[in-house]
Length: 314
Image (cartoon, rainbow, N blue to C red; front, side, top):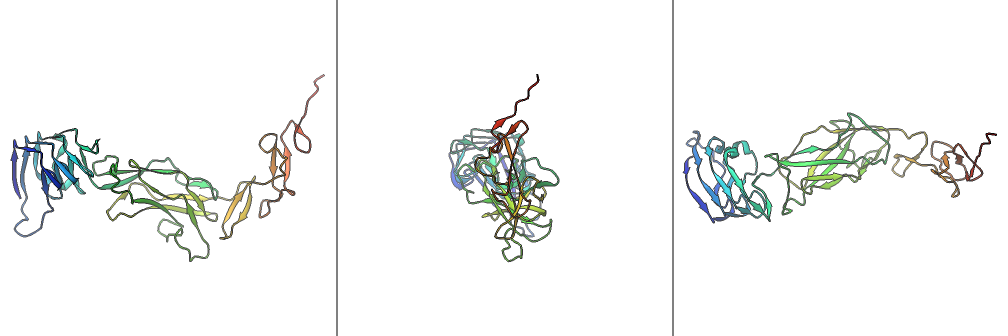
């Protein structure tokens, strides 16, 4: 395709996509295999509107990157979903000209600035973690994720167009093994809670993740659901080690055969955490109020650890 646009005014145009200009996907034929000659300069795109994407310009044309583009003003355009100024769904390094020499101002989606955007492109992990993260069964393991488009913008889904898209964490025994968290036919069951979330203003906060599995090393793998496009994860699967219970906990087994850790229970009059500790009678399978010991802190005495010990220094 050869195209020369110089010193034009695109004003008050409207379309479903690409209010002023829509560059469709290039069809590969023998006749069209030649390089494009495209010039787009000194043009004004203002007050154009797209009902969906690309208020001024929409492009899926994979030779538009070859265009000579400069001094284009893209102002006061609107779109109904995304990309009030310019929108390209993907491969923006091919499907768009260099926008660094364009002037963008006041391009809006529902009163929010959105000069240029694409489909969701990649996800980053915004939580500092270790190479191996050691936790107990049922511990909270919060993780936060950010979603970006191909322009490296935080993906802000203003109109909730992608509201059904969700991020799920699945559990694996190694980096290449089967998904355990969805495998209910295995001898041992492994499951997660709080492991599914949506992106709000480009952020997915999974603050209530709990992992229920027997002591071993596992990997959390992220997957995207209810979205057919390609999204990259710019981080490795997250290595988790489920540890044995701490010495002050009691190892119990739930109905799925999964080990979990339980705090010892003492009689109701034991002031646990105030002047006493509850010491387990045994570290496995039995958590009985009458067997566990109410042990006073230093400086306290009595059956209920409610009497202070005073020292006479005379």
